[in-house]
Image (cartoon, rainbow, N blue to C red; front, side, top):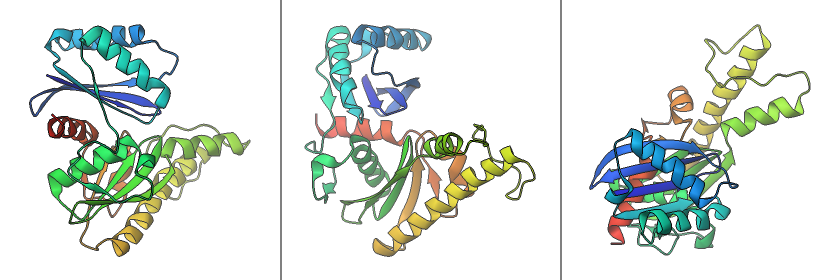
Length: 254
């Protein structure tokens, strides 16, 4: 079995694969102060609930956008799984060609998502990942990763509104029933949710004009299911795209 670990700024997403089948997946909070032993304890508990054992894992792959946690996860893999993990970088075989001014700057999560999306759907394709930051990535019909756009994520935007406007409260990220609202909380939710949907549609439309108007648009990430239904441009939601991409890269490189 393969253990796939995607370390994001807010959450760490874990997935266990039996060949191509995703057996189980979890989401835990990202904490740079936790030691390899403490993360192993968390993983052990999660495995136990799923009736899985560490001994069943024969491969580990890690992608991260949080550099301090990489050595932590590598040590955890070596100590508790007795496995040297495969770490995602731009130098891995991915099935796509990275056309970036400096390939080292491309986030591991963006590489994984692009590889998975191209393998599953072909190109041209646009991937929108709703994480701590929202990323937009474009891949051509010939499998060339062109880059894209990065903007503040939904939660960051909502938190900034609360922190910088003294009379506005912190609100739950839920969709209000309508756009025009007569109370402050609903009005803020309307602006955040529907405003962000408009942002996504605007960027995607401009990307399509530069890439191909026929490009398929898919979404992933923790907040994809909240924002995507309010957009006009996103055609499909793939919550486990990053995990599927990690499995794909592990297979390509082994």
